[in-house]
Length: 159
Image (cartoon, rainbow, N blue to C red; front, side, top):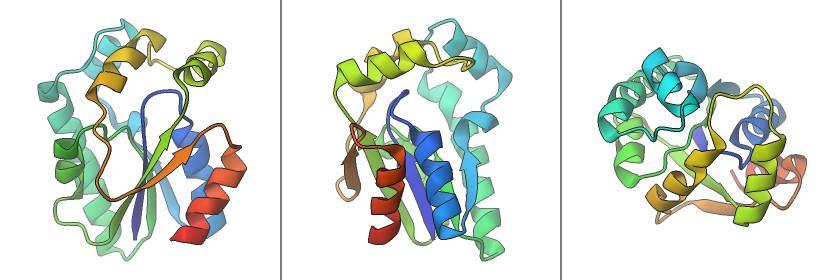
């Protein structure tokens, strides 16, 4: 099984994903760790990525997921996965991929971004991510006003 914890910057994908992976004894990957340097530089500068920036990154993540699946390894991936076309590319050749969308009030997300230290993602990119977000037809949608621990528990119980 592959669980993709998705959403915009600042919703807690990494935190919830790590907790979920630990709770369910799954391997955790953070998509942010696999961005090429050019993408990181753009995001740090507040420049939204274009699809042409994302395709190689999504292909790299897809290869990672397919390799894990070949090893019969269950995975939690924290990844923005904002558009259906991104999710389609991420899932190619993978079985049993489930998406969980973390979302919440814009003010809450902005507060979290303001408090976050040491991350390259420029908080100014939240608006472009919100404009890009396409909610999956079939996914669990959770409000991040709840604690990360409670969210991971709810996801784990539902999977």
